[in-house]
Image 1 (cartoon, rainbow, N blue to C red):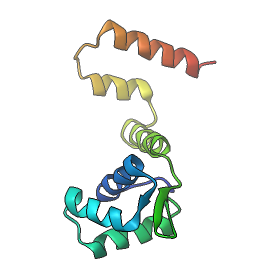
Image 2 (image 1 turned 30 degrees about the vertical axis):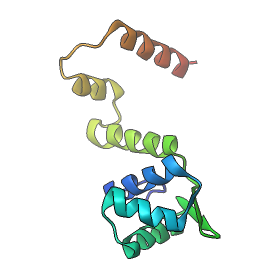
Image 3 (image 1 turned 90 degrees about the horizontal axis):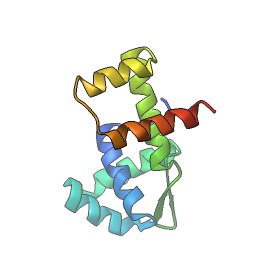
Image 4 (image 1 turned 90 degrees about the vertical axis):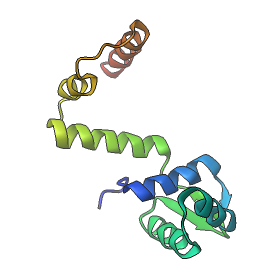
Length: 119
């Protein structure tokens, strides 16, 4: 399995950690119960699996991320473009925008991003 691939429930779980790290594992159980409706066993099972995959770390009952949110998002977005649009960023943008316009500010930001990427 790809290193940064997170399924929906795993992503929601990991988002809780990214937003609250470092977090005590007992506090994480309470947070998962409140936010995700998970039992203690579910929380620890998912935590164990993500630790085994090198995405999270649980040392001395303190949970932190190894993989940063930005890296997981980058991986997921690259996979969408690759799988769905055969790697074509212009095709992705065309589909994403779907005929709707963007503001001048958004257009300028996209231009800046593209210019930086071509350097």
